[in-house]
Length: 343
Ligand SMILES: *Cc1c(COP(=O)(O)O)cnc(C)c1O
Image (cartoon, rainbow, N blue to C red; front, side, top):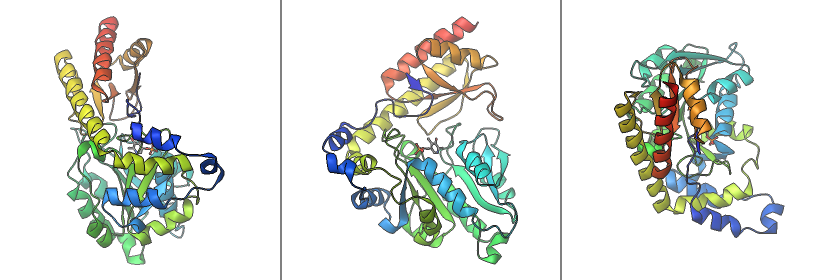
């Protein structure tokens, strides 16, 4: 059981599989057309189609944002600001593209402090990476704060030269939290704001690779130059409208994840393990000094969970995906057995 990468443990909607089965030889033989997928995604997010850029998973979106942000080399080594611990692609892309990652810790309750992030911004800052709900803590902050931060960044030192830093809000887990900063008038007013979404998690399309960047068209333009024209393959393009149309499936899965989160939090309370309130499809759990042992013991019982214990700010912690309730029940049983075995 894969509970280490926050995937949809049930997989995609059956309607997606039906759409893929309807593809034919020319679907594989011809370059893909994105019209239908792009419009379905834009409608789903409530923005005009020019405000979206489909990417090969949001990982590629993060690469495109970083490349676009670092394009201006006239002011020395470009910097990215983020928090620690965080999703590792921000730092990987920053390093790969010759920039420097500057991080601040999460607050003591493992929430994202927008003030701490704001305080790390310098004239060298080209992009600020934040995640809401946060990964790996699962904690969420009200999305109104991001528009305010985007406004502040537009007034930051670099803004005088006409290129203020981008604010990238990674909303990979927004479906589970039921909240988003995406709003057409806000994006219209805030050209520094870029929102990332993915169909990997709530929609269960991780294997197909489909993500999206959402921003003002002028902000997306340099990112469109980075993403190759046929980066999203025909199978992903065909899957998107079908996945988005099946609201019932998504709502069912979001409800399963919410119930699983509660089960995991309750089980941890019973076992005397610290957790943090998660708005995403996973739970961070402080398991203690033997985290690697517990992870191995759970793996031996067929349950993969993520060892985060070696990361700064995440010491003694593991992260477990909260997916289908039956899977969570098995995961909790394996966790209890692993804890007993480790005693
Ligand atoms: C999973 C994840 C992604 C990447 O998703 P893909 O669309 O599968 O590339 C991006 N950001 C965060 C925070 C994630 O957890």
